[in-house]
Length: 102
Image (cartoon, rainbow, N blue to C red):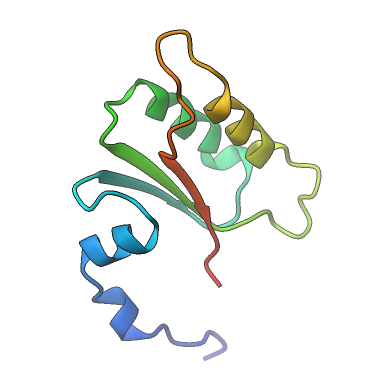
């Protein structure tokens, strides 16, 4: 009806294959947020939570800015927060992945 159908093969991909494609350990626990990146969706809370979760937790942010939200600073905030040196440990350890759903 107006929306193209998804390739069903992508929906049946084993989890470990998807994690490998993202460059993540296959035994990690992957948290995901899908769609346009916007402050109201909780991306800022997700990265704050990830900082206190054990290292086997990873976050995939799937999507990009909405074309009409060029002034939204959510992506910049996530990058600044994640890459800032934490006094307890270095947090720039590639546990956050940005990808697009093209």
